[in-house]
Image (cartoon, helix red, strand yellow):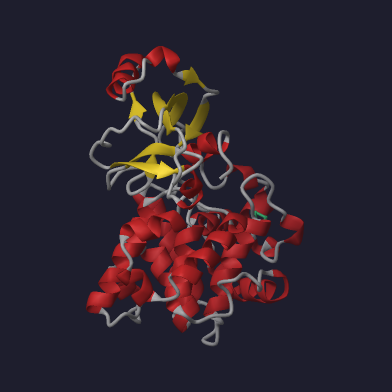
Length: 364
Ligand code: SF4
């Protein structure tokens, strides 16, 4: 840990702001607004997801839910298709809950302080500070994954950032960097600059120190330890699970010529809570029972190419099985199940791997 931080603190924020104004990003769809709703939506979508992926989702979401009251009025089932494919679906469920809470208790508007914002569902301290900085210019520091990387390298902070002591030191240093900055600090440019530096310049694998405005005071650069910081977490091997998915395709009818697929809505909370997945089975005998319940001998099921989907905490091997049944087979779907016409699959809230599997069979 580098002890004499004072000169580093004094010059830090000014260098970030100056660089952001010249070289940072200025034309993203959620920039140039002080609308806390739009800022909040972008911040939540950008957690765990790349900017390039977020842009399209952000615009589609806003055109359907242009403000807090519109989102609060919608049902969760109406919201989920606009998040399907982005992953980490708890974000969408919390977004919806938060809009309802804002409508019910905050007159449909965001509160003014980061502390109040951080009491809302799905909003942590860093996101609350980012919303307040962009919407109100509040002098409150952020500390997301990209920013942690910049701080650990620049200030020479060792220790796994998820450990309490390291996290506290990072937040303390972030607060001191804001306090040491001039009173006229442009908080929106500073906050955006930290995000841009972390994603464009001080990247995980290849920090571009030659282009970095912080190079002169950077501990990691001076000591050649960019690749030691942030201190890596000990990696645990991800557990692996497997499942069989049944693609039960009911042949076309006059109404739905391409036929329908049996889908099952996933319970909330849960990894895919609120989304519509293909029915899943743990082993071949469970799949066989399911096929026979639909009057289909399992030996008529065709095995399709499997796929591996990686979640944060485990990997899922998916083995899809395709079975076609006649339009005359009329059986009541089970609880939370529904026949979804093929032409409606594209607008249904499907998890990404299910969309991929069905996209291999139909034009989604
Ligand atoms: S000089 Fe290099 S390591 Fe230091 S903050 Fe800049 S990009 Fe990161």
